[in-house]
Image (tube, rainbow, N blue to C red; front, top):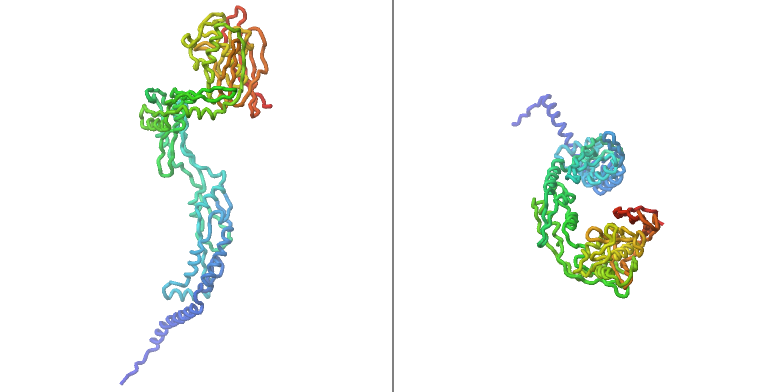
Length: 563
C-alpha cells in the first residue's frame, strides 16, 4: 500500500525559488531560439556599428553598410600635436582606412558562437540597450610616413650622416648631426585602432623623436685614418718596361666612403674614374694622339694620314688595379697596356671636324738666304701636325733642338740685343707666322716672346721668336674641334693656315703705340659663334738704343659684353 508523504511549506518555497530562474531561463532561451529562427541569418537584434543600426541586416546588407561608412571615414579630421608643432589632416591623408572584412566579421559574430546561457541573456539585454560595435581601422604606414613628411615640412630635420672632407693636408671627418621628426611609430601608437563614430574629429598627442645617423663618427673616423695612411708616401706604377713613381697623396681626392645599405658596414674605396684621371696625368704617354695621326691637304680638303699602332697606357681595368693595390696597402701596381691601331687613330681623327681654314697668315722674306732653308725645314717638319681639342702644342717639344743632323744651317739670330749667327737662325719667321695665324684664329697663346729688336718684315709687336729650350711658342686648342697646322712656302714667303671648324675668331682692336721702342700692349678681341666676346692683351718690349732691358711678355684677359 502506497503512503503519500506530505511536503512542508518551507520545502515548497525552496523548490519554487530554485525552479523559477531555470524556468525563466528556459523561457528566455525559448524566446531567443524562436527569435533566431524567425530572424534567420541576420545580424543580432539592436546592434549598431559606429552608431549606425545594423540589427536584422543580412550579411550582404551589413557589408554594404560598412562599405558606405568606409567611404566616409577618409574625410574624418585628424589633428597631430607634437610639442610646438600642430598639424591638421584627415584619416585618408594619414593612411587610415576601414578594415571592411574585420568590421563585418566582428558584427556578424555578435550572438553567435558563445556557449549557453550567454547568447540568450545578451539577447534579452538587447531589449533594454543597444549593442554597439566600432569599425576596425587599418593604418598604411608608408602613406602615413609620406603624409608626415609633408605636414612637418621644414620642421622636419633629417639626420646628417658623418662624412668626409678632403683637404690638401688630409682627409678629415665631418661629424654626423642628429635630426628631429614626428615618428611614424609614435603616431601609430597614438592612433585609434577602432572608430565609434564616423566624422568625429580625432586628436592625437605625440612626442617628436630624435633621429640618429645610421653610422657613428667613430665608424667613419676609422676609415678616414686608413685613407690617410694609404695615401701617404710613394706609389709605383709599372707600365710595360717603365716604372713611374707617383706621390700617393695625388690619389687622396679619389677617396670615397661607400654605404652599401642598411645593416651593412661602411667601407673605404676610391673612385675609379677619378683614379683614371690621376693615371692619365701621372703616366707620361701621348694619350691624345698615340698613333701619331697627321693630316694632309689636297685641293684645300684636309684628310687624316695614318700613323702607327701604339702601345698605350692603359687597359680599362688599370684604375681598378690601382684601387685594389692601395686598399691592400701595396705600394706597387702593374698596369696592363692596350694597343691602339693606326686605323683607330684615323677613325678618331675623322671625328674632329678638321674641315676648313680658321686662321691664316703670311710673312715675306728675301729669297736665297741660308735662313730660308731653316724656315722651309721647320715648315716641312710641322706640316700636318694635329692639335687635338683641349691640348697645348709646343714648337720646341715637337721640333726639338735645331741641328745640322736635322737639316738646319747657320743663320742670323738675336742674342742679348745683338745680331749673331747660330744653327737654325731664321725659324723665328715661321714662329711669327704661326703666332699670327693663331692670333686671328682666336686660339689661346699661353707662351710666346717677341724679339728684343723690332724687325720690319714682322707685324709690329705681334710676333714671336724661338730659342731651344727656353724660348718657346705654345698654342692651346681651346675649341671642341681638332686644329691642323698647314704651312706652305715660296722662295720669298711663308704661309701658315690652321684648319678646323669655325668656333672663334680674333682681331686686333688696339695697340698702345704703333712704332718705336719700349713696352707695347696689343689688344685682341675674340668673338665666338655663340655671341660671346672677350678681349685679351699681348705684350712686347723693344729695346731702345743702348737699352739692354730683358725682353718679357705677359698675356692678360678682360671680358667685354657680347654684341
